View 1 (cartoon, rainbow, N blue to C red):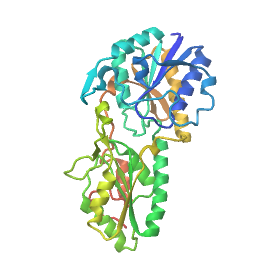
View 2: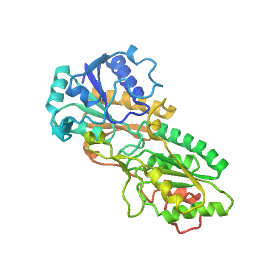
View 3: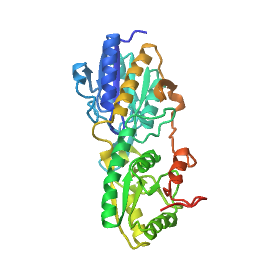
View 4: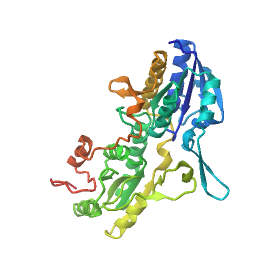
Length: 372
């Protein structure tokens, strides 16, 4: 199949490595196939309101190391369920998929490359079911997409979080404090778990294992009794206490997304711990720092490979699929197998067992003694 015109959009939250994908798609399409590349701005909003621009090799020079996305993105623009806030504060939901389909038809796209996480790819799959030649490219710092070993952006977020943990540990050690670092991940604890191990956290709390506060405080006390009067805690934003609820922020802007905005569990945890121990407790929320900045070498290479392979798939007429890392290869998996699936950390995974085997408290009691 000869491809003449390819569209690409980036949806959902931004992350490091998006520009590496855009660069690879543009260069591979032009160099290997002489195709024209159309960048769709602000995710699916660009399809609804026809905001696009042509991308050339010159446009993608020097963006490999650049954070964010030169096309812009949004996590509020689902064309099938377009949410708008009325003057009286109520929310109206509209189906603007027809507008998006018209833009795709007007552009004459031979392939639409959709770069995003679970929500973005689900929207892409719905367009594929309406006849659009869609190929998905997995992006999320949360690493919670199924059927791929890693998503690009994740390793950069882990590096940023582990660097932050290194710095907090020095302050905790100097002042004999309990230092809490809250990181992103929504309902998956991959960032907290890997960054916590890499940064030497003493306690790691993730959504998949509701934590027992007595177990957490017991670890802090055991360290103090052993002469270590400080502890470092890594907590994922979706972590919750046994029998408790996930902590959310009630912000008006989240109503347009239709999903709650997580955050605040670190401060909640700090307030609870302060009442149970005689040590100062401090909390840092890493927030969007995890999303920004230059991607690591791993994410630059992964993003480049995924973008290049997506063009190969388009040239072969392979649509309704996502390019995925099945180490060491890039493979194709059906988008139908991804719809609505969020990959979480198995509570009995090797990674969790590894953490607990070296003395990291995961918020639960284990059947063997833990060193301090």
